[in-house]
Length: 287
Image 1 (cartoon, rainbow, N blue to C red):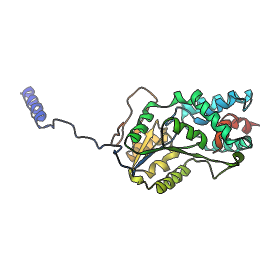
Image 2 (image 1 turned 135 degrees about the horizontal axis):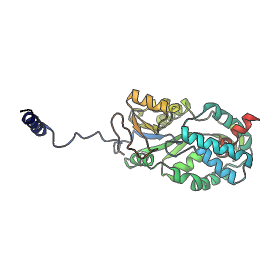
Image 3 (image 1 turned 180 degrees about the vertical axis):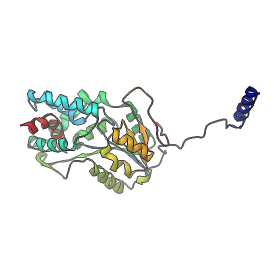
Image 4 (image 1 turned 120 degrees about the vertical axis):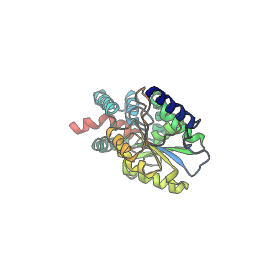
């Protein structure tokens, strides 16, 4: 009797069930030009930190000495494993680098940035995140990188990926030569949210229809601005916050299927300043 009852219930359930699963809302929405996407760079679009990769290229070009290389390598390894930004270190990096960038021509560093992208960055782009960005482009939407990295480096990466452009930290220059000062503050944390809000106003975007992507809890202000926030390869604090807020999650750091929360989606320091700073900051702090 129990077996018959179970079989009958299963048969009835299959008859009542819809033939196809409900369709998920399409996202990005094709042709929705009031929407755009904003991507953090380090550990979101690219494995590791752009500053550190750039520093490797600068070392190769004799921008700093061999004794700094070990500290630079340790920092890069730590960042890749921990995926956590240290605000105090970023401050030290900025202060250390500004004295080095002074006197270098912008055009020189932009040219070097192109070379370093090919040497150290191109193979470190996360394919999954790249596909998310392409989905927005295919939908007719603009896509920007938003990063604390030097704007010159961010623009190189955005151009190579076919993105719309980049927001990054800006170093002051006069007549094409870096002065050793910043224009404003590094584009980090709340400053990213301010930049996105300003760009959205200038572009006539509806932030409730926009998407933002980041790995870091430092970018919660930016993620909270938009209607479609994503935690990509999230650190522990962002993962916890994303689950609490029912945000979407993607993790491309392993072969496992990305975790999903909520509605699934389709899938300056100036150029030399940031990169050099990544290699010399600890050295300056310990002297």
